[in-house]
Image (cartoon, rainbow, N blue to C red; front, side):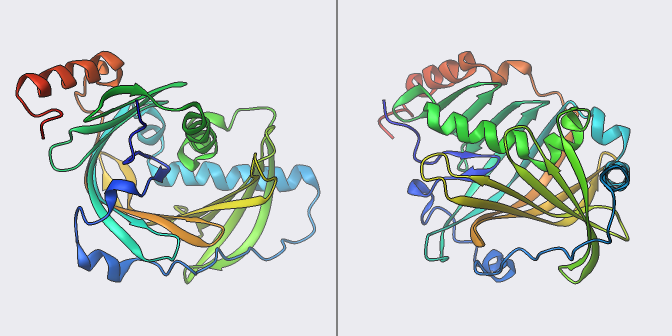
Length: 293
């Protein structure tokens, strides 16, 4: 069974069926140019490892407080809706896609695509499935590995669940001007060889950017995945960026625009099981909306 060509996890969106789904032209004008590089922090003052790590951890603690403190850390699920722009290799917009994004903390995620939500990608821990017109199938191992790597280095995963990992190395990265804002950089290195850099607004302590540097597993080439966070809204006590842009080696790969978002809703845990996809497929076929459409 073929993999879902519309696959979009919380960290990446595929190209195939996105083209020409939704032409929301005004979004394009607000998108950051694909060629814009991720700025580098200035070298910090000479600091010994212990004070540097202490300063970095203090900045991270301030960021958690700014994001909502206990409300941010203790959120157990979220339900968001919006539109995503997919960018081609040339940097041009390849199309737009409506989506609904359901999360069950810490590691379950359900993405429904299109106005009817009849194409679904579902991640539950180390398992994943996709639902499309061809039925329900396992997400390929390579795609699951990419998802796990992106999840483990995601800013929210680190702030919510990984800061107590004794294997992490923390370093203060210095001050910088990021998107016309004075910011502090924090650098984290994990046991898997990822270098994760995060920039926080000095005035608000909210995240502005993150950048993950790693090696391509096939070629060994250096890869940098950058993320921009803008347009924060206070939702259920949690500061939530309503616009997120992602880059790979300085080239924009996608941009999402949330239209609504809620936390701690009554989303059923059953939504994050393969059985829910099988039931959805059976219902669609019963109603004549499966392969015929």
